[in-house]
Length: 85
Figure 1 (cartoon, rainbow, N blue to C red):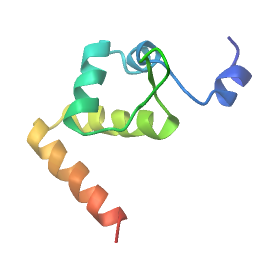
Figure 2: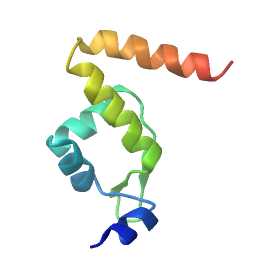
Figure 3: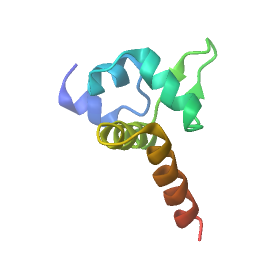
Figure 4: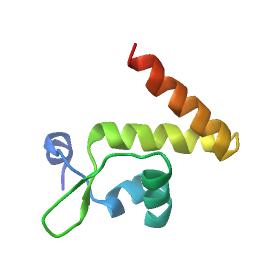
């Protein structure tokens, strides 16, 4: 797959997202559940991540390297409230 195909891509699989962040798919599923990330599922039930989903997961992963999960939740929840003003 070349770069042009990646740019045009709308949805990514959980394994592609996990590979991108060098984590196991179980960690992506955990963050999806823990932070109520709305991920689209296809007819077969496979998760389909959008660019926005991937950016949020990346933000969560980067924050979780330096703080506990409860602190990350406060930041994410505060950011969500702030964006809805």
